[in-house]
Length: 472
Image 1 (tube, rainbow, N blue to C red):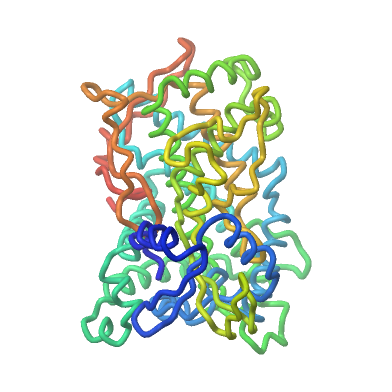
Image 2 (image 1 turned 90 degrees about the vertical axis):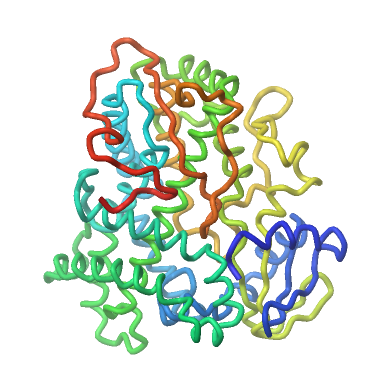
């Protein structure tokens, strides 16, 4: 069960039945964990015991047990170790990746400059983090008007909406009924189109790569590993699993960071007083001309607090189920091997015992009495333990550099005739808690801001979709 829809119900049930309770989803008995203490104990305290995924019907059909995020056991451990190693070798968390993020920031600001203060779709902001993911996966960035770029983002958008739909949740709970009704067919059709594009890209990259030679992308690393491992009896690096891993990285890397940046911009436009405080701090530390760098976060406590509060407040991915790999004891209960467990991340990010005003957007949650940045153990938007997000370091770097760069250069404003308070912060129905489709505008803060390209919202007819982009 993945849709965010039942999360409020689960939180209400926890108020009545406590932090650990059982629900029946169709014929499957599932354990729900609510609140910081129960979730932290399960994700961190159990080590490997809660590292598996239950067999989620739609993802069984899509990935056939492969990939990174919905695989389990030996295959998951091998592909995760490989992915972490490759991301490090490609500069994630280091200077080279920060340079690529700033290059993408320049492309994004060029598009925004071209808008001339006119409204643009909020979704446009997601193009920059999506392109950073593409650069990491494929070794090249795409022009924003590139048909492959547009097609991939449009398909990802449609897949995420379908995965969050009631019909797909019904399919996951009652797969036989769902299959009879064909509820899975629309999303599988879209996935096949994505997979076809990925196979084409893999074929382009599939030239002999020298053993132990440098790789320029995640795809290159997958191909190189497949060429080197003649004893790959489990097919960890065969084409099917290579496509599955790339598909996982593509979906997760584009949707999550893209949606978070959109939320950050929307919340800054809705809270101009908070936006102003961030800009005062940015001006003091960076001035108007020097671009932000990852190491600047230590000198920008309020900016860091705002970015952390955005991620806490939006509860982007409410929960993804786990599964006990062995007989496991949680909270005094013995759970047999194979028991599905839902750790409610939303309940941690909104836990009344951990946050002073959990339902409000309040950067003070991450500041001490002296205004210094305050780390919080209940800050778990990337999950925790063995299944913590493999792209956490990249996401943190992207979000900081892109948001700081945007606020350094622009005032983020609602469209004409709309007050900041009227901006809609109700999440859209999708796999993640993404913002609803709407428009913003930017006003340059410095008169010497160079002109950019023509605004996409006017020159290419980009519709105001719910996701990162739409197929032209």
